[in-house]
Image: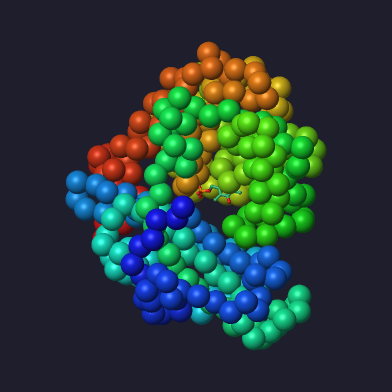
Length: 304
Ligand SMILES: *Cc1c(COP(=O)(O)O)cnc(C)c1O
């Protein structure tokens, strides 16, 4: 169950958690269009710090832009509201969920004239696949549901509607005894997991899906930069599910998943069936960065 915190930011006000409510005729509840972000605040030796805050807020603005929705706040105002919300909840390590939604007042698909609301909630959220998944890797299944066509839902937007597809895939995997789904694109190449991007490693080089059917993950971007800095060859290139089967390593990246190794796909062990050296090296560096221990990457942290 969700662990409650004190306050939720709603349209400019910090309201008590239990009072952060919406009307049942809230447009987004009916037609599946709301834009959101997932951001993490980590505890560091210099106090709490939010990882890549400006990039997340920019993506929220971009997601809204794609859907011709005007957020009634500037990027600076949203960043400040996020910081205020973390502080109002004790400045602890947390997951941050800003949500831009179409509110109450208009029904019908066009949503013309509908109010645009913004809420920001924070709550404690540990490793998405548990400490065991983080350490030993997870088991994934190729989904029978495919990621949408690039001209269907707009993959560049982090939009709730795309999560209908994600939930179908996730439920299928979990009901088959796996922890995560690997979705393919309309041409059959590997796209991404239900809410995370995918990397594979073969013969010491990394590969990740190019920016086609996938969300442009900020963790993905982080890992690409780290791989380059570590001198690991990296290609943004399409690959097939059987290339994952014969890879030495595979891992997922995302704000929720952080850097989680995949140890098995469709019953085939990946590499030795244990997290490999590249995944481990990148995972260690990632956690060292978010905990404020890497001076070189300190510009990615907003200390609050
Ligand atoms: C949020 C998300 C990701 C990961 O993006 P990050 O910016 O790294 O958190 C990947 N795929 C999908 C579909 C997502 O919604």
